[in-house]
Amino acid sequence: MIKRLIKDLAYPVIKSRPDFLVIGAQKAGTTSLYHYLKEHPQIFGNIGFKEVRYFDRSEHYDLGFSWYLGNFPSKLRKRNQLTCDASPNYLYYEFVPERIKKDLGTIKMIAILREPVSRAYSAWQMFHNFSDVDNDHLRRFYDKRSFAEAIEEEFTPDFDHTQYPFRYDYVGRGKYVHQLEHYYKYFEPDNILVLNVDEFRTNIDRVLNRVCVFLNIAPFDPETIQELKQKKHNVGNYKFPKTPADEEKLNFLKEYYVPFNEKLYELLGERYNW
Image (cartoon, rainbow, N blue to C red; front, side):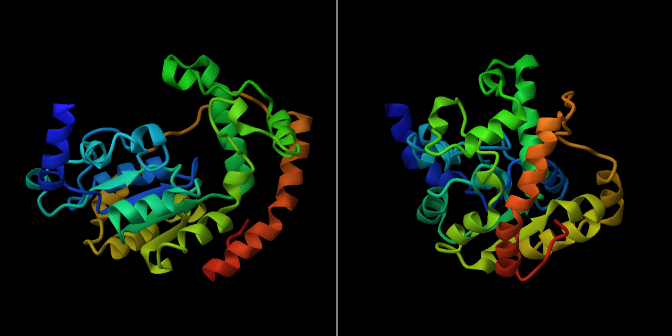
């Protein structure tokens, strides 16, 4: 209790806050972007995990703002560099933008979006693969369902996500227009840089330059860019082939997402090749 009181008093004075957030989406390249940005001389990486997950996990949020600040370097150590919190679940949960606004005020954020059908299947592959991992924390999030079973269940009326250890919501996480609209209730669109992971994969130079302009920092030097192109982060090595039932659900989702994607393009004033 005394230790927490000391932190509550001292950390707001000596600790740096994040200068920007990478808010998602899940399975859309946030890990790669975070590690690329750490190579920039004007950005200081977290002293803990990439994903602080303060604003979306109540068990973290209830620990208080000083706990959050404990994940970032001291102001003296950071100097003039920027720090960030890259937690891809922030984009999804409706209550997160209000918490961010309350605790951090106006702050720059980056959202990376991925074609929602491939995102859903990649997320399922990841969670279905957790049965074999050596990490007890990850293994408890194992999704034993097939992809087709998971999607079928999510379209069941009154489906209850709480029966599972994680809110997978493979379908709902791809409705980006709703998520961004909720953020725009609390933040001006200029505060949120929205990227498409497809361009991130094919034109990393342009994407990183957009990020640097957005953060008001110097561009990456060409040599560093060439080095970054050789690096891969959080690449899934999954072994589950698509079944005919999976293919049927994937084709169904392609049609299902059309109106949501159209509303997204209208919101952003930009079309993606989805």
